[in-house]
Image (cartoon, rainbow, N blue to C red; front, side):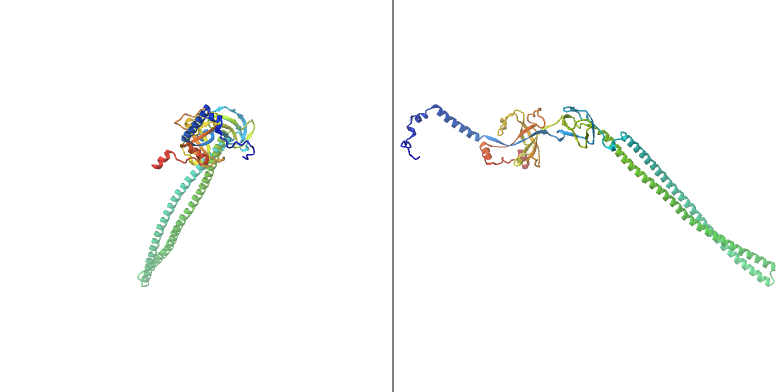
Amino acid sequence: MLNISNNNRIGESIEQYSTFKTLSERPYYRILNKIIIGVSVLVLIILFLPWTQNISGSGAVTTLKPDQRPQTIHSAIAGRIEKWYIKEGDFVKKGDTILFISETKEDYLDPNLVKNTESQLKAKEMAGKSYGGKVSSLSAQIAAIQNERQLKLQQAKNKIRQSILKVKSDSMDLVAVRTQIKIANTQFNRSQSLNKEGLKPMTDVEEKRLKLQEVEAKIITQENKLLASENELINAKVEVNRIVAEYNEKEQKAKSDQYTALSSQYDTEAQVSKLKNQYTNYQIRNGMYYIKAPQSGYVNRTLQSGIGETIKEGTQIVSIMPSKYDIAVETFVSPTDLPLLHKDEKVRVWFDGWPTIVFSGWPGMSYGTFGGKIIAIENFISTNGKFRVLIAPDENEAPWPKQISIGSGAQTLALLDNVPVWFEVWRTLNGFPPNYYQPKSNLQKDKN
């Protein structure tokens, strides 16, 4: 102070006042001291109490299996809405008709399309059978040609053998005639010599000359006969070649007709298969005019409306919530907390709209929370920048409430390690993550 005033009381002590002397004797001052001391002791005790570290997350109620979640029913074909069989809020069983649509594509407008396709299919099947019969007939014809060729060849070969024997016979006859000529010529010369000597008459010489001329004429006939036999042998050999060529031509022509029939048969079978495919497709398409429920459930919302409106393939018609499902919770945690989570780890869950009192560090003192366990941890980050974790009810604890609806909000606490309160306060003030640890089951597996 500047001590400007003459009233200077700096040197005076506060203890000289009677109010200060009686202050310590007042009862409420003693009570305040006791309260301060008690609160300090209580805070000190609380700092050493165990605190359960946890990871909080928020999400929504879902189903455990994909086929139990809300789904939309689509139209597999394009068409025009003709009649509705349901309304919003109705319960439908699997196979119940939801909507009837009519055809809009010009390729399927014929009301007798399936029947006409069936008639075409039967006609093609009969044509295929006819071609099959023709193939069988040609096979029999080819077998007959082959048998006839064998017989003809055998006959021609036998004729060749006969011609060979005849040539041999005629050759032997020609040799005999030539021998007779020699004998006749010798006899003629002998008779002529004896006639000159006067030992034989002229008539004997004339007989020998006549006989010689007969034998000479006979050798010409025999030579002609031998040449005819040789020609017959050549003709028999030529006949064999002609038979082989003729029946090969017949067989090849029959085989060509058979291959043509087989080609037509295979082409007809391909057309039959195509018609069967079309016939089946038309039958299935006719069944698609009635859009049916894939499973039992409740109709949440009709996404199309009106009569006479056209819809395209894959258009959403209605949304259905299955009647039977296994409840679960999907929650989202930050990437920094993901390494602390493990499969089958215990989790506390509470639901929006359900009476709940939560003490995050003392889960045993919380009210309205339910036990769960982690069954799946997504390995890819979601669009919200967090990782998705799927939680199922814990079978060892109280069941989850049946009044919870799919899509309701849910909050989760994944319970981690137990630490003192002062450590948790110190960690939070410094921004450190919770203690990294592994569940006991994993540690036991590592030891084993």
